[in-house]
Image (cartoon, rainbow, N blue to C red):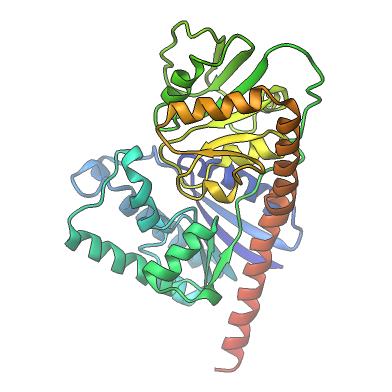
Amino acid sequence: MHDFVFVLEQTLGHAAHSKNLEHVVRADPEVDATFVHLDFERRNAWEKMPGLGNWSFRASLMARRALKRRLAARRAHSIFIHTQVAALLATGIMRRVPTIVSMDATPINFDSVGSAYSHSASHPASEAVKRVVNRRAFTAAAALVTWSRWAADSLREDYGVPDEKIHIIPPGVDTSLFSPGTRERHGPVRLLFVGGDFERKGGLDLLQALAGLGGNVELDVVTGDDVPLSDRGVPVRVHRGLRPQSAELVRLFREADIFVLPTRGECLGQAIAEAMASGLPVIATSVGAIAELVRDGETGFVVPPGSPARLAQALSTLIANPRLRAAMGKAGLDLARRDHDMSRNNRSILALMGDLTRAGDFAMSVT
């Protein structure tokens, strides 16, 4: 029996990954698991003081405290920490217990897309310190898991992490939940947009692109934000309060014809994998690691961010060509089932943790 500990950040799209991973781990009879959830909204009064409200500091402090409590009760064979911000203050623990640090993006990756998140790099001296602190955590980890080649390349090139420590394992999607609908119907072509932060995810660009699409289109928007609707000749339905993997959200994917995410800032875009698993062609933008999911001209179209004209052109092409929609949707479905099945990918994480456990036990036996 393996005794594993999972420290899981719950911010943004990481909550869905946490849920999928936990589902797979709990189904494994050979694993006795402890889960620590790091909730971004939980703040004590002292954490609101200047400097201490930083999420990296708060998350890594909560993680270190939880790990110390857990390890004081009994030993763990291996630890999994997602994301790297939760690992920064746990290097001492990571040197004692084989630990995987998982991430969707390195800090330098995030700096490259951060303007859309209202984030910018700080003073060069502060950035140098940040790089040293992160490199220290990466060095202490026994292995590093990234969601994409984009992040893996940054670990190697920006932080000097050797290739043998890096494992690319996308978070995956529940392919038993997200699967193609029938789509054997007549009527308008249905577009689907899913993005909690409507403006950052390119919602305003999409609304602008709708103006020239004509009347044979309708749009479903899943968001938590207000949507500035006006008469663009395209019916728009706004769905608020939908939870990840909810029945209503799955239904919208199954009833859509095209998934559109013209995001201005993104690391990977979990909703894109869900759309592909649902057999949808995808139109997205060339930011972060999106091009590893949306292969331009094969599984959909990749357009520049902040370009409603190019977005409208891509939409018009797919709207007018149902055969192309079907071909791209099939190519995306094949890619999702091959590389983005959450059960298979999360079992790969468990297998890696098992390998680290055996390597650690061997190292102890020969010292």
